[in-house]
Length: 101
Image (cartoon, rainbow, N blue to C red):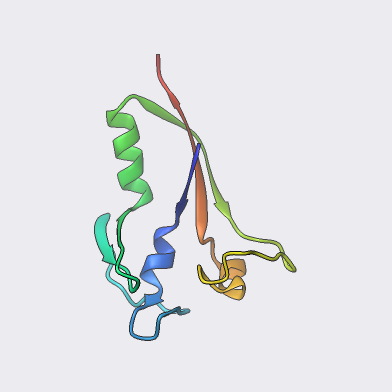
């Protein structure tokens, strides 16, 4: 099991304004490099790219859970995405995979 930021977070991030938007502002690619404002580089894969990598390496997907917080939920990650945004669209996803024997 592991948790990732959803590609939607990267697609809706407006670097010039340093915030999430309700619009798609970045180009879609199945595997791309995202240069973050704070100087980090994120390598982002689509769900399809993850599925292909899992299959190539002998893993089966047991579940994919897209996380959307319930109304009234709080977080300590206030600079990740606005809570109002995260209640509309999933910002994180949990992959559950098993290695085939």
